[in-house]
Image (cartoon, rainbow, N blue to C red; front, side, top):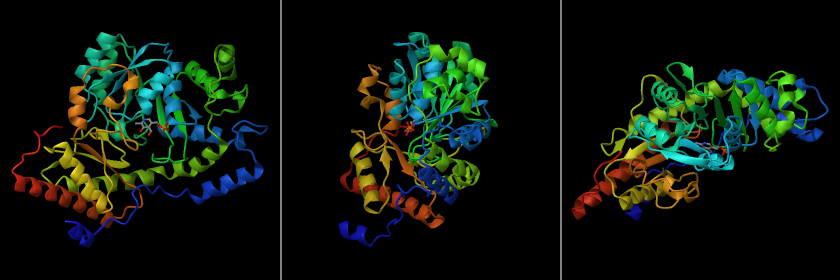
Length: 418
Ligand SMILES: Cc1ncc(COP(=O)(O)O)c(C=O)c1O
């Protein structure tokens, strides 16, 4: 098989390759570095303040009243919980298919994650949400739109109303997505976004909290660490609203740097074009891999407009060692695939059973059954249509190789899940 592999076409594109920063961002970053003014607050007017301008632009882009830019998506989630008055030890509901910084943000805020099962469509199971909300007495749901899979937001909002839950949206993978024509990030009391390199916007590190309530926005600005310089915010409630909270609100030093904002502003302007291309890449690979009877893409509602930067799919009916063999064959041909069912957590990919720090969560059987076959391909914008077709071919051929080997041994894999 080794020599066969060597003669087969390989993907030469590096799937970890981010987009370059637009020239306008580089030029502004150089200008800032020459001036040394990298801190967002300084002795300058708001009109020259890159972070304040970006906050204003981001709030308008998402369609919320206020935006506070911070140093990571995880920090934005933590701030959201703080301004919603989460107290030490409070339970916070969160869907089990998410990334480690999400339960991490709940713990950072002093609260305790209560994981909710997901269904075969990868999104939160609203029946389990009801059960866990009643059993825990939680008053907040942190809904992670993980990898841009959008839950039925009509059902989620109905459940939140019925259970008296405040919603925080984790939109780290959902910038530009919508449900029923309404932008994701505008459903809850607050929403958090990330600008870490492998997101829609890349500053290396960065995050945004968006919200509409003036008191909560004032507290977020103060918590983020505004050093009495909150007058330099352009996306902010009236100064007297902020002043009223000043002595109540500790500084957590979570600010975004001017340098990050300089890199992000031109990216935000170009985002609609980039998001359209990302979806085209997703759909091209998705359609091609779904032609394999061993692959299933989750169903998408016509009310969902997703905004993909990667492709997720389930491998159906494979044992763990067979999935590992499929992924090894793909990796040998230049196609790295992440797997949420892996025994060990690896680069960006983990599952509830790896989060012992989150406390006892019960078996989470449904979630683990879905994650057992759930795989993920990162899709940089540099992928051409030919790269997409080749990636799909590599995966389909790897699957066929493993299935044929199984036929040779008379084994049957495992019952299809997910
Ligand atoms: C689903 C999800 N939420 C939140 C975050 C946190 O973002 P950051 O890395 O900016 O803290 C990430 C980061 O990868 C993520 O994948």
